[in-house]
Structure formats: C-alpha cells, structure tokens
Image (cartoon, rainbow, N blue to C red):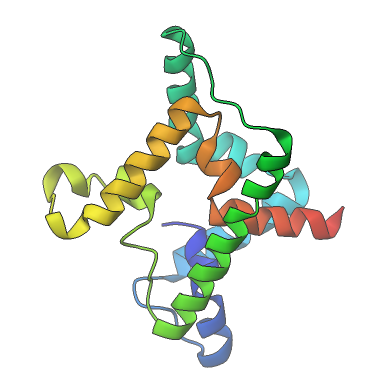
Length: 166
C-alpha cells in the first residue's frame, strides 16, 4: 500500500499490462491519487500525510527539546544534495525495469521502519536496509526533513510534476 509502487510498476504496466511482482492495483490507485493531489494541492502529501515526514518531525521536536543544535549546510551544497533524490529515483526505476521486480523494497527505509519486520523477524540478511533506515533516522534527527530533502524518490516525482506545471 504505497503510492511509489505505481511509479515502480508503470513501465511494466504500460508495456505488458502486468504489474511488477508484489504491486497491486491499490498502489496504482494511491499513485494516481497522489499525482492528482499534487496537481491540486502541491506537495501536501509529503507535508501532511507521509509517515516519513511525521517521524522526521518527531525527531526534530526531540532534538529541539534536548537543545541540540540543528546541523546546517551551506546553500550551495544544499542545492547540490537535493539532486540526490533524482539519482535515487532514476536508479530505482532503471533497476526495477531491468530486474522486473522491486529492487528498492529491501532497502527502503519507509518499509524497513514501518513494516516492523526489524522487531518481529530481524535477520542479518537485512543489515543494509537496517543501516539505511538508521542513517535516515540519524540524519533526520540532526537535519530538518533529511530524507525528504535529499533522498526521497517519491518527493522527486512530486518535484518533477510540480516543476513542470509551474
């Protein structure tokens, strides 16, 4: 149940009429809803609905309560680092098309954190996904919306859509 699944399966759906394994019509419906929402209300999904945004906001609140200073980076670096999310998006789409499966699934910090797999079925085989999730959480503690600003592939999709329309 992730709107990004619609982006991951789009090529296969268009070319063969089939979904990538483990993507269902519900993801496509969510993806279409997200795109329509972005057209009507900008990045409201990212700011008000996405659970990754919520957990990042909680971490920022905790940092402020602990009186830990936010890490800031120069504006020039900020602009460059924001391109990383487009690189992540391109890599996910490329490898999903090439492998005809969800290549990002095992490394997706959203899935890792919210599936609770790490509590009930922790496995050393998933160490890379756990590591990425920890980096995202640590980055989000020290920098406001670290994941959203620099790595989120869904945010990249919304960014492209909004940029084209403005």
